[in-house]
Image 1 (cartoon, rainbow, N blue to C red):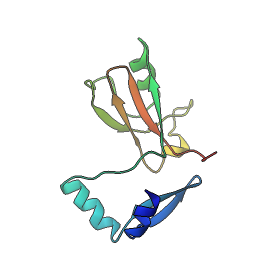
Image 2 (spheres, rainbow, N blue to C red):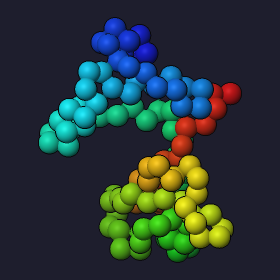
Image 3 (tube, one colour):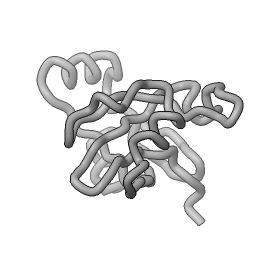
Image 4 (cartoon, one colour):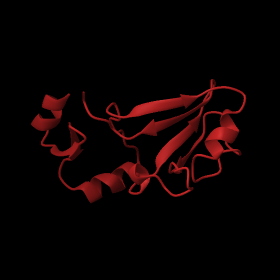
Length: 116
């Protein structure tokens, strides 16, 4: 896909050793178009953490900034991870990540890690 993005004129950004397409022509126009209609982002460079078990809601609710106890199945909220001291984790200061409910538990996308 990298070659296809490059051929289409993508401007790339570097995140933890990954070269990712950031935008093509006008990032503000592209974001507005995605919000008005639909947008698709490749998040394959991110990982997912899945919590399972009877206490998963309570545990995750204490680890993130938004209230997740009210979420229905297959819904989500944007939330930042908290440190043990209750402050926002450094990786989430710029952009909260989505927390989703699913049929087997809760999942959360995590920041890209080194390619190794």
